Length: 165
Image (tube, rainbow, N blue to C red; front, side, top):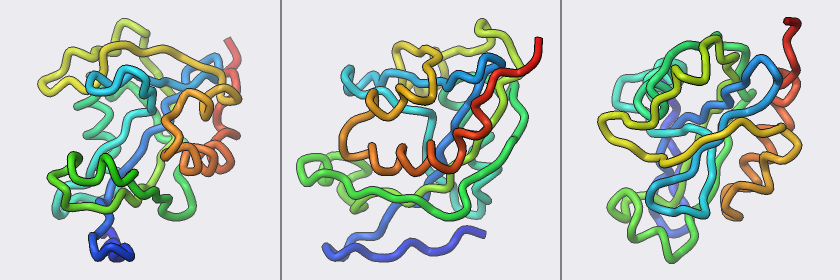
């Protein structure tokens, strides 16, 4: 089960979530642009439902956000990574109930074709996507999430290598 998130200094809990580093056969990482914030690119991520373990949540979020489960699990971060929401977003996101997120990140090898990726899901979050080299990933991310992405890259980039043809 997922550990209970700690309370922040502001007295708000952290939302428990997962993140997905989806890696193609060329060793590139999937990123998508958020519908609600066109300057914000990110890897798929989302909350953990009650009673759900992190790995199950990662598989569910992958399908909910990018319309596919064509992947193999490669690994995960050793611990939970977190960020605080900027003050101007705290009241808007998640009904103002959370200080930020604590996430468990997973690396997956994408086993499908690009055509298998479908952003037109039941509750779309993205309007565009692309594959990027892992060394350019962090620069695409909104500043308040960059420290988490730096940690994800430090722990999971070893999986982002080209596969033999």
